[in-house]
Image 1 (cartoon, rainbow, N blue to C red):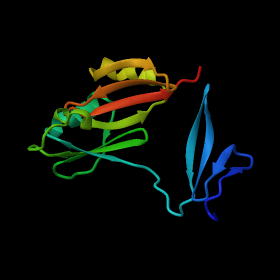
Image 2: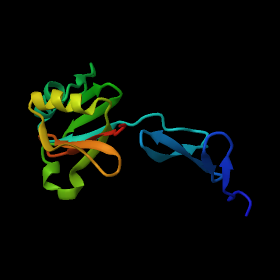
Image 3: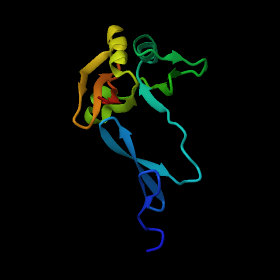
Length: 162
């Protein structure tokens, strides 16, 4: 059928499926498949928005423990925070159920980290609420998990290269 042909893309070790392309990416000992988009418009980054019960407590945790900086935006009931290439927006919702009471639905993000062991030591030394220690996983990543005062869970990972 036209438009649904699968073909090897010359020179880049990828497979062209017409509407999208998958490319092999070497991450150390492991190969991963990376989807390449042929869309005219592209999503260039993402930000997370979190409901928190105590804006001051949550803002302090992100700044003092996780190393974020507070952006100079004055919006009542909001904190805009940045670390490196990641931005989170905290919105105060005093009457909402905290994420920690949502069970498996309290996952917030997966952060790809360069220097994961250094990052772990940095935030653990500042009192991060770590729920699992750094460990090599069978899927080729070194990961650990932390949580926020509201119970949002964040897993941090880095590709194992050797």
